Image (cartoon, rainbow, N blue to C red; front, top):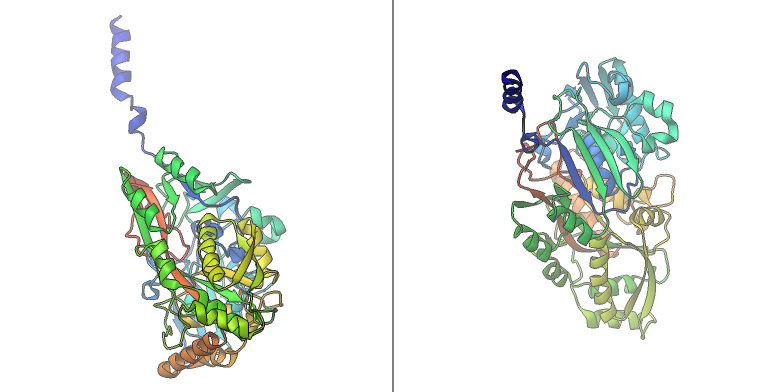
Length: 513
């Protein structure tokens, strides 16, 4: 009896209540029906960008919590140097970095393969970004040399942990082929485990991560397209981190919940209406001008809320190197819009079809500017489709008006090239996201890219923006900051001011308190 009592006492002494066990599974709710692409070189939507940044690295990276190019630091490369003319760059890789799933050590061959893959329009949505490179070669297993055709505004910006800069396993891509898009292999703090369609993407901690084993051991990235369902799951504790709505009412309501933190952070995504200048009736500049005059930017910002949005002031986002407001952006004037439509042969107004995502935040915003255009006699016939389908169809040039919201590396060159250079026109061999078929500023965009005189470069970028605005290739509407909610026991391990992946980075230091 005494022995039994002693054993019981010992068991009680060493038992740890379940509530005291450290929490290591992070449940993240995303406004999505399903994942689109897990190959990071095709990750164009917010839904795909968030997990890509958790599973992959670049040669360099933004410091966690920042989108400031001044914070770029070593990632897979531990150091680098450039020649005096800025055209030859040499990167020295970390030793011992391991790919997920037993695919071996990262070498220069993987980096060369990844950058060439990212630079090929058949295997990447970001091929245009690698066009400046003439040569990409492995000097030895841990050294990569890049030679530029011409100088570019930011070489390191092309090679960050973002879009075209992500490094993949050569062996895994070659072995898995098309299956790599649903079974990716990177070097990041978290590794792919599985995808259950319309339910979740599961990731596990990469305990061999070169910066140390993550404190979070599992991430369940759950697809919950309904805002109400996602918010309820968050309130009930089923989600630890929730993709938020960029509107003031949502922010105010969520902030009022106990033990809740709402994070609002950069980059701001510029929402614009891209108008196909070659498609009738938009090939008539008077119709495009009428659309521009019908848009009421202040009204949209009042509806969305000043904490999370601001007026679009140009065809690239505010704060980018090269941004200018000197563009004669057309103001809201409904009567002027009606007069232009009448002059263009549409005295009774007109109807234009438009493909629109069902993503709730974008759909509700679309309904607001749809109502604004209606006041001027312009009826938007919106064909609402699932978000992944929307991305596919707009890239097939199936929508004469494209509502697109985007953030890019904060230099004017990248935004101007991707959205307004003729090389980037959709449904062409070098397509990116030029939905407007705009080509009026090609000369200035190209000249600015190689211009070493900073004042001349800024002047060229300003001229490009002025020409694009004058032709009404796109109508800027508003800029939206990123919004997420988390329970206050989740500590990112850094101060969140910005994230180029458009979602909070979960790093090796992220943990539950």
